Amino acid sequence: MARKRKSQVAKVRDFLTTGKKLTSRTAITRFGVYRLASIIHRLRTVFGMNIVTDNSKGYATYFVSTK
Image (cartoon, rainbow, N blue to C red; front, side, top):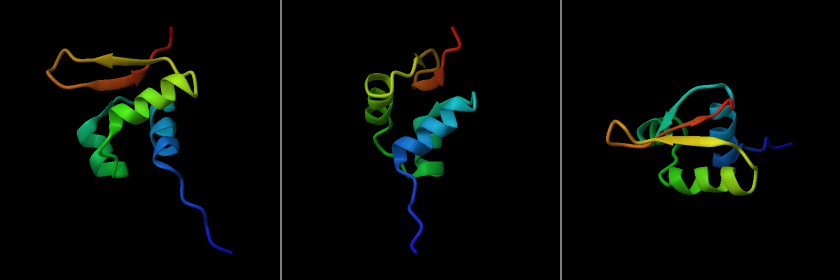
């Protein structure tokens, strides 16, 4: 029986739920995700996750808000 691979959405969701921060560079190297903003949008709308975007460094950093 063949193993089923996790989707990119599931990989990003699992990573963010551990409390870590995610940038597009990290998403590309760890998960092969080139459209991170699209996945974040899906996690916010479909899964109802409270994901915060921090643009203070000049690039987007995503993390799950605990509030």
